[in-house]
Image 1 (cartoon, rainbow, N blue to C red):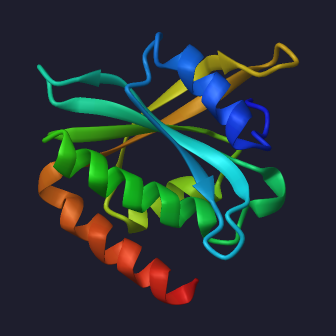
Image 2 (cartoon, one colour; image 1 turned 135 degrees about the horizontal axis):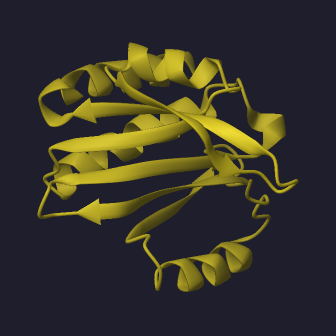
Length: 153
């Protein structure tokens, strides 16, 4: 689990560290009304050769279930697919997070796998992962879903 980034300075420090690793594109998620930072979203493990990337989102816990993460995720995915000409984007979701896979499926993602004890949390517990993917040919669903979300927010 990642910590909440409270300021642009914290984001910039993490970004400069991460860009040297495997995150070619990383953005802050901010509220439109106040510009408050509520999370981050990034593309990593990007392969232009194979036309895919993994998208990961971190959202402050108090901002869960309000639609902010879904809106940021769908807009970011649509941008990444178009800008980087990707064939497929992937998202790994912790299995205890039951809302996100349902949201992703409504946006056009399909479940491709379930990985037992695939990642560790900060306590050292093993967590299961659900892998969902969206293919470029299905990304129109993503854009429609993003438009529906924007009307609600």
